[in-house]
Image (cartoon, rainbow, N blue to C red):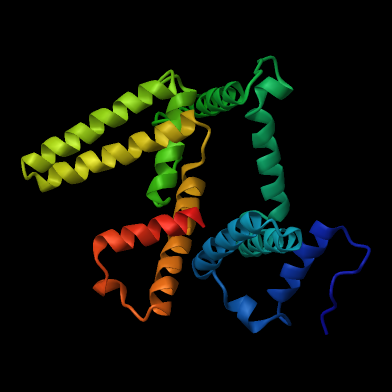
Length: 265
């Protein structure tokens, strides 16, 4: 009968050994059936649960969800190890080497006295690695197209900014926002549906640039706005239920008054 890892084993070694056992001949039938493709959905789910744990400020939950993400790394590494490709230790070595290479301002001769400077140094090191390998591709190529669009827009802006393509001040971005709003109005006046969609997209993209200049994470800001909207809307629903009225029967001006009450509370 397989035995669990010994108590005195290094925690990471114990996890690697555990996954090897679970995938072994006497291991778990479910674990043995999994593939890289079947684990994709679990990996995405675990990352979202990790984000929820961070936002909850629950330390124990944060620890546990980090463990679930680490399990995914060990699990997928074990599958690759069975193929003879790499193992979890190779993953650790590869990311450690990369972090050293990408921080020439820490481990080399470059200087960086700000977060922006550190980011720019990282991007230069990354571009040099590609050049050394003979790769010719956009600096944006490493951003997955499958990312949520808001997050992808933020990451594209960060990379472009690190290479010097950016507005100088938040006020400059605000001017661009006003321009995009005017262009939406022009497309609306012209009845150009495709133009409206395109200009609206440009407006959202510019908003992510403004967030970067204001040092605001747009995904967090939108999540907070969603939560506030939800709480206020539920307040309105509860207030109307107490009066025995349906929201669809209430005039717009009274709904607005209820909304303002919800904001004040």
